[in-house]
Image 1 (cartoon, chains in turn blue, orange):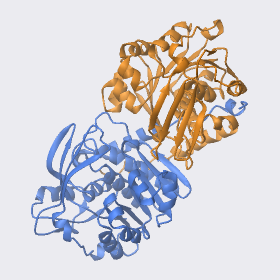
Image 2 (image 1 turned 30 degrees about the vertical axis):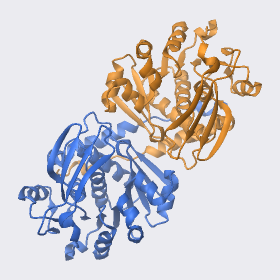
Image 3 (image 1 turned 45 degrees about the vertical axis):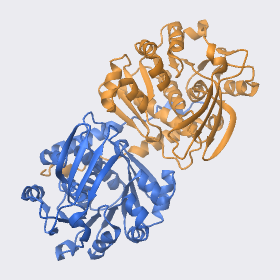
Image 4 (image 1 turned 180 degrees about the horizontal axis):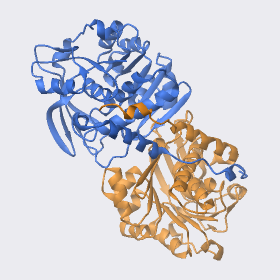
Length: 311
Length: 311
């Protein structure tokens, strides 16, 4: 029971209609490991630069996140600058400075190679592959990707997908990857590439889990105060994988629960900038919100008399 | 137990990526009454022109829809021409010929005035008001509207909303009406205008029901074959109101069931052009799809051990 994540640890400069933050702690692996750490031990594999302050390391360690795999390289930390309009579903990237991430090629320790659950953040698929190859016998390999790699490194991505159990992408990415607009048909096309399960992330509209021939629709929590959608998808993946790592077996019902736990963690992530909401979040709040998700979608059986009506 | 609907009966010329139909039977009141007729007697109030063929009247009557209120006027029937791209969420209107609808002002019969459930399709709010005033003591008044009236006839629309129990609009319309982007806050603003309940229709993302302080998230059925989204919202409203008209009382649980019944009827409407799917649909299929909706969103309780974890 330990989750290994490879992805970005970054500084984000973000502007939303509700405020603005400069060089705040971000990155896919940061959000993922923050959310996953509520459920399981997490090992973080990433690289930061000389400008990465001790306070950020302290935060990660305070959440029990293993930072042995967090390399420090000469140069500056990955820096993303972006903004959101009132339509918080779409990020507008102003700049992406890869910096130390450009030449990152990690070698896993013995302990890290024994990780049971592996999450490949939406980094270069060649880098995803190098990490994947080093992990001995993972129970679950999950991966994210993005338009940039679907378009620019398709062959490398397909090689990775052949070894992925669970792919998590948003609907535009799924359509682009499959070359098919209908999302049910797109899921079938993606299954043919390797993944046995597929989660389609739909922002404020929740998520779909395709699991064999079955579909599960997970709602998003309608929030009156949504501050910063950055990291929602990675927090979702972190909650999902953290929950899975506790599960003795992987029946479909477990993946459904894990999808809701992911939705719960995403719903908290967006309530504040950066990973700030995770700094104060309690397990009691997590459990309560899971119950609120149950209430959100509950409806009763159809009255018996209806079945007897003429059509 | 009888549902009265006022809205358009029209010819639609529609093009989708899956085909094309010229001057096929359409209109908000047609879709609404087709869907509602599976659950309750429906009275249709609308106007058609001299070009409205007997075969369409026969279809309506074959579904048990009362057509005494379907006036025939000199001139041509309302004709909508539109198309959808692969993004089936958005209709592109090419032309709207109101024709006989332009001077429509119905007078209800004694029987129609006694309707228990009233649905005001998304027509001119002044016309909605004239119909509303003629119905004696409706149990539920539901209404739809659209950007054209929100923008162009706001005062008339607000007068109607003061008497509406349930408003059904899409998310863009809710935001426009409320002047608020966050959908939870938009719902609060709309409650202050009169409606006690609000359904936000979100196309392929399902629907939200705001009922007092509670939110219910209804999924949309992920369909591999979606032919023509025209009329989905009106079929939704028809299923919802038809179900409500059978309900002895109006607890929140009844509105949740009704919202799913609406989603079920919308999911069938889009499987074929025009109201063609309703021509062959059986009550057995309706009941089965309701059960499929239950399966779609079901997930188990969180394992007890999680509540005991440290955060």
